[in-house]
Amino acid sequence: MSLFRSVPFRTALMGLSVVLAVPLAAGLPATTAFARTAPDSFADLAAKLLPAVVNISSSQNVQARSGAPGVGPELPMFPPGSPFEQFFKDFLNRNRPGGRPNGDAPATPEHRMQSLGSGFIIDPSGLVVTNNHVIDGADEITVTLQDNTALKAEVVGRDETGDIALLRVKPDKPLPAVEFGDSDVSRVGDWVLAIGNPFGLGGSVTAGIVSARGRNIHQGPYDDFIQTDAAINRGNSGGPLFNMDGQVIGINTAIYSPSGGSIGIGFSIPSNMAKNIVAQLHDFGHPRRGWLGVKIQQVTQDIADSLGLKDASGAMVAGVNDGGPADKAKIKGGDIILKFNGQDVKDMHTLPRIVADADVGKQVPVVLWRDGKEVTIQATLAEKPDDATLAAADQGGKADTTKPTDIAGLGIKIAPISQDLKDKFQLNADQKGVVITDVSPGSTAADRGLKPGDVIIEVQQGEVTSPEDVQKRVEAARKADRKFVLMLIQRQDGVQYMPLSLSKDKKPG
Image (cartoon, rainbow, N blue to C red; front, side):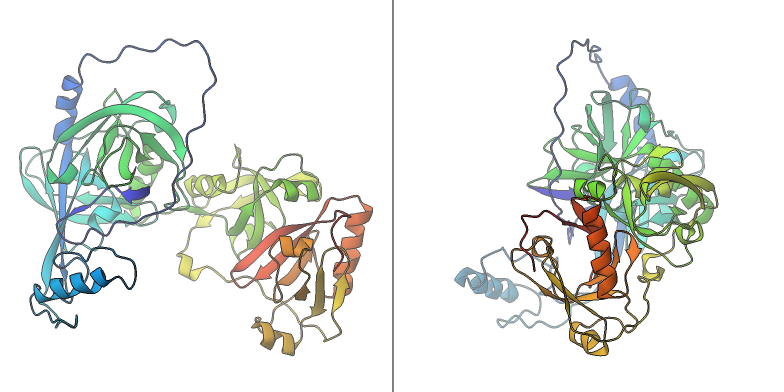
């Protein structure tokens, strides 16, 4: 099965993306409960809400070769080397303007590509909310009201990460508008209405219930979707999900489907997340999310055991951005963030959302697990910069070359960082730590995926600059009857804390 952005419904290139499947909802305990009766009809509520829901069409000039995807019929998918592949390629090229049997076609003139989506009015003056992917890249945006009045729209602001856009139209008279509700009070099983523009049909109403809360569908760092079985199809993106009080509790954004059509698994951005972003787009033209400036990883039970933490909860700090809020607050690698601004941090996926929702410039309490106890510090949040401007991982000093040292029981040989090893393993010029030169098959290090060229920066949250430092800290962990020794490892794809088993049944290196 595949997860699709539910729209835009395009008359040319569809451009749909596929991601991993989501987990199934957990089973509910068997209890005695009394359900509220279903409404006799949704007609009165729908009639009240329909005028505030709009159709959005966007268009852009596309320059493409006649054989490019999305221009004319698409080539069916065949296994590589299949004789049908070349057959269909030749057939389609002969029937495209300027097509040639060898597939080389001249450039075609620019053409207009149009996509259709949905939106809703939140202010009578003409403010319209939709998904960013509905209008992304558009040269021209048109908002069509329920009475078929078409108005040109301008972009007030948009948030690519959160997939939200705010538009403005200039009507001749005040427009009907709807308001955001409190998505946090919506419960699994509550009735909801979805209104939108599926497949360009306009003004369609579907009913269902809230199927689940807090869904992470791997679309971004702030995933916290409401799942619903109200039918959502291509063209519904950007449309509202209403509660029975006529308030918007979600923005319909994606569907889970093998075909692109509704199978009763749709996802909506919660209103409590959306309305904060919409307010920022209105005031600043871009989102102003809180930023702590840390790189984090999941706390596994092995990591928790190695640090004396009872439960595998919280978010572990794997790195700190130089000069960022965490750096200024003296948060350091190896700290585990248990609470942020009074909210529990259940796992690494929780922290980005609650940090992003906090006000820029606000000083907030952060509860850490450090040196075997809870510590509370104060951090002043900054505005999240573009990912491209974030500082790279810290780099440190040099060391002399000596013979590799065998760390018994872990299955690794390590050496100080020399120029030869920097060249061999393509390390940074000022890389700090101790480099792994060999990993024994079947060892605990091999089990964890360590390999030559990985660099040990810390052991048990203490910096190491020589093999002797590593050896002493490993032996100290053994004497303290630790089951695991925690190492901070620098790899080509970043830094990561990694617990290595100290079990006696592991083969020595």
